Image 1 (cartoon, rainbow, N blue to C red):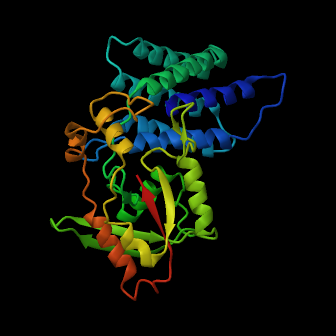
Image 2: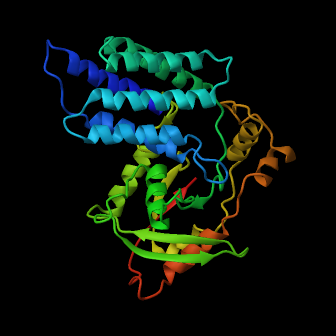
Image 3: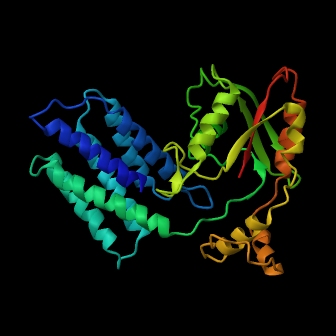
Length: 337
């Protein structure tokens, strides 16, 4: 859906550039932001073994992002790869009986014709907008999924992509889940990194980053605004959030970390019922108050990973880090999933 919206945004810019009756707007920053969101969302879609689901689309969107950064921007060089990425993902998501496959092929042909000067950008723009609206409606009809550690305090995290360092993965995962980019290593420097081992012998990394010139309160406020649900479009408010798992963030004093991380939160009655409906691939009713809890409503908790012991290990390490790594005088953010 984000890639289709990025496609429409790119084509609007191309229409502006080809309109000889008015001066084109050379500022592609807003379009660049939408492209970045589409790229991050595509990168975050992986198999259980952490392999990308849409490797070709990732490459095409990276080409488009590179073209946007190359001044002056050549709109055709931006539009072509975005259209290819939209087609690849739609061919993977929808089966042969779906007319959406034909829509994706039609869009690519129209973009290629316009890029070659054989047709106006308007036709492709209208098709892209129709596809984006259709995908938005399709997403709204879908059923939410249950994330691991649902309802518990946790920290952003995930696995590494190909040729990615552990620190780079931590920065990327933080940005995907919170909308707060940590890619500027000078501004958001890493002051603590270590490898820990859980009770089963699995190794995992822990990284801590400075909040830069901004206060931690400002960072938390931005994240809470970005991750808040925008039900009108069935996604978070912030387009930068491509892996939507966080309900809210909260600043926690270091001395209180172990009261949050690694401590199981008793789920509310409403959360248990919502989980039961979602586990059954059914949209929960708006009013859950009339439904009595039954043993079967707890079944989903046995299948969704609720192991949070490693967060307790992280809290303990952050409380008593190696003195060579830090002076220990920091607040930290906790994240509610």
